[in-house]
Image (cartoon, rainbow, N blue to C red; front, side, top):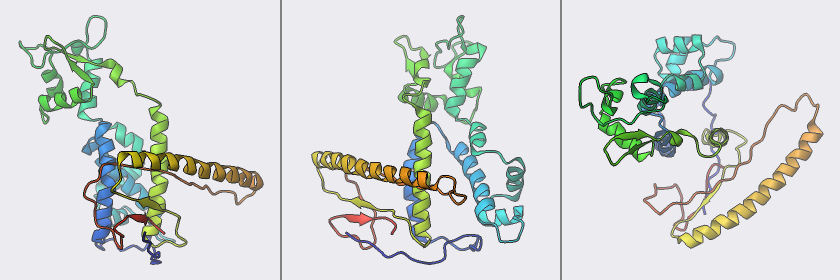
Length: 306
């Protein structure tokens, strides 16, 4: 087990040097954080162009909100200096102030565009209005096919590559006669995707905010801890998960009761404008090569922000 004292440097903010090179350790940490995020993005059909639009909008939004100089108007030039986003894009984003949801909606994935065309265009619907079976390629001039569907959207993507992805995702099925069916039922989200996505965003955002505060040397630091251990069997991991769920839920129930009592006491107070989050998570996976940890003991231990 190892812990490190917090570094009480001044956190980056309005006075941050826009040209300072980020520490290599921070770049490595961000890359590690991005890997599971990108896995989710690809799994839900969010390609790089969509993410880049979202990130660009968020960079401008955060710079404008959190990095303004006291008593000075935030200009497009300063936002560009802080973010690296082109001044023309900064101006458009600030003028239009689109939400990140609007940016996302403006850049659907190629797969989503193809499926939308298959569902909605007359050339690809049958007499009952449903998506018609399509051959892989047109056998006669003007015949609707999966190839014509894809090339009608973009000639920059190979129909075979997109088809392989849609087949793998279960969104398209190949019949015995070689025709392709659109699996309409696969477009219905399993479970309450809206609720799951809401808590995915809320929980991870608060966790990242707490860890980022600690990484920047913010004071007082937030509690942000995790224990880790390797060299375990699947049975041992299952035992740890059961114990975590029992003891962890007991902790959350206790905190929730306390929070309820405190909220009742604070009701009506003008200063009752704060929120509090306490999270709990666990994760397990087969052992792989782990990145080096500072001052890490061989047996694993407790890590995270102090």
